[in-house]
Image (cartoon, rainbow, N blue to C red; front, top):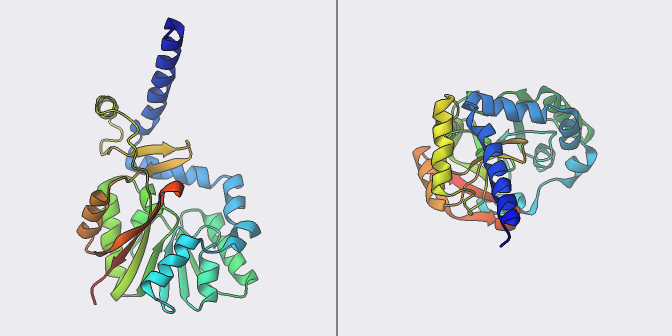
Length: 261
């Protein structure tokens, strides 16, 4: 191979590595705020609350969730309300819907979209890891569109699972959606360098392989092994219903978690 081509390929890899260090300078609260600032931008608010998005309704994978758990009524808590894409059809089915989102504009637009479709929902502003829902209240917790992967650090994810376990009634369900990406992005040596950089700047000290700034838009933890998911869900107090519902081509998966009756 020509030396200039070798150099060009090296510089591209170096640029990718340097770009990845943006993740490492931020602490968990910074990563949440990074994502919040992105989704608070007008273009994202308009997209998630648009008539086209709301009319799209539940995706096939989401419909499969309801078929799998065979739940047709009850109280649903949606984490990641957005503009109401899931809340509106679930309310139309007869569920009593409470939704939470960390973008106030989206929460207000979700209320408006529900009213336009002739249904009522309870919409609240809140950040997922700071929620304190009342115990034994909901029949279904719905963690929207891969958002489990948007929670930085394993500890925060497990803490959320435990809170949702408490919020569910006995026999309740948690539909937990995550980002599925089994291909490793970096070699072990590069992973070590990233962790070392995080310690030097006292940044993302809880970094795990699979943590990325997805498309420079939001924090994502990419899951690629069911054993990693099992360990977190079990630590959260749930029974994991196998098999997982996974769409590898969409980098999307759902775990159906059950609270013992």
